[in-house]
Image (cartoon, rainbow, N blue to C red; front, top):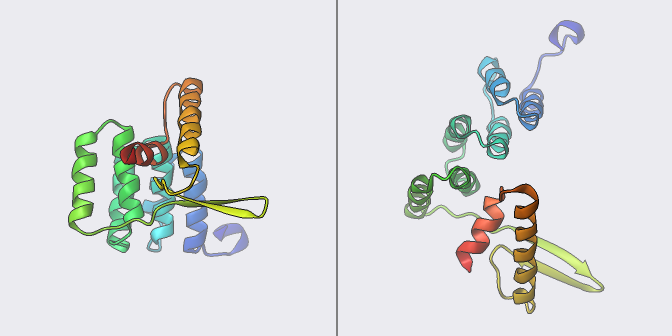
Length: 170
């Protein structure tokens, strides 16, 4: 890019490359690219690596990326939850408990996930662990059935954010 097109890479170019490498599972290469950057990585670059680490289960690199995110955006509760979910997926429940308690002590909050669907002329809104919908019992029953089918098909449940939040509220 620099040699052929005389274009100096910007942080957005690096962010795209880190995202591509991360999605391909090339976390070591993504980390090396960040370490070689001649400009300061922003929260998007770190977030791309962090999300890839969550998908691929690399806690060591994930912690490294998370530390940088926390330094840039200390009050981002979503990143703290994602790291806690990584610990849960790895069976490190002592870290999950300690991390979640630290979040409570520091008054971190994460906005609940929200989805909407329109059926006919009615818009249905769903929040994580929300049981106020008139058909919530039926909805959670279907979710449990889908979770069981997914576990059977994949041999595991790699959805800690979905499963964990639902189970914690039950």
